[in-house]
Length: 483
Image (cartoon, rainbow, N blue to C red; front, side):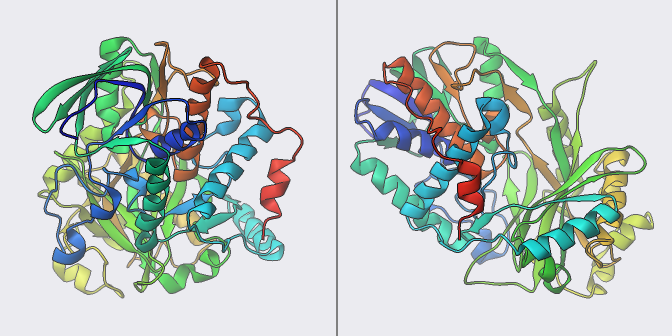
């Protein structure tokens, strides 16, 4: 945008799920002039070079994390249709039925723009059997209704949503870094030129890739936040056949575990059946994630295995703690993720190329450094990973096999939880927050819902009647009976 206008009623920082759905809600009323800013590219221009080159070329900014669609834009696009998975809308709204309503609204918007009609929900008999087996072995299985878009279809769906927004008059300013913001002002680097945008309202939806940036700006302008727990762990990869009976029940099964030694909480997250492990670039550190596609398959399944870390005195900054782990792992891996066989980790030895060649299956991410995860992750986290997988193995035999592959690090940067009211307005009036980067969600669906909530908070301040809640419908029942 060469000739940038200097005033908008609402500026939305971040074009990820939270930012896009905030814009979508605001655009329904055609009453406000709205600008969405993102440092990344348009969604159809985003691609990870590693897909073709088979190695990460350290794009800046990382195209997996930034651009229209956010970190969800190149993800496998799993939509968790529950308000208490990937966030806690019950706590935010203080209204259980309204929380379910928000999930239904998010799902409908995706469906209206080409989302898959097929649901992953499993039969009641299979779910009960899996819950029983899990409970008998000290594991909690959480049944959940899901839709799987697929990494190869997510971009087009997001582009459909963006087209709707543009047709409704929403402006986009892409490839543009937000330098900082404060009440009624946003400062950007527009084609090398620092410019100031005046605005009545700001919605900050910075995404996981900008959680550290958001923390710095928040401290500078006095925006109140708490340091919440951080999830640190590994990406686990196994032959797909091992998990096939489980992923047929739920595409992305959720298992919660408490470990024996430390009684710490460990969970599975972002399971990708027949998927691929990918590298993420955070600038000066790297990480790993997973994708799965509808039309392209591997012979492996991967999932994130995360242990939750909470800090109290004297250090509370879990974001900095997580980054220090990422920095150490990046150094040990020579700028690449570390890959280790679980059997080598248990025996206290590093993996080598020779040992990896003895594995019963091939890794899907090739640009790695064979090494020792115990040199990078704290002992407590390593212990949690080993013990957690041993418990999970009683439910899914084979996941704790010596040949199981572990990629490190996988760190979820949503540790700073912004202090907001039920409309997601922050301690600085007229500045609202939404999504993962603000610590208010941990998945696509909940991020979208927080965007809608922030938008409705602005609409209420603009004098719109609060008629958003539909108490005449049991929304949980409506979702759980969908076919």
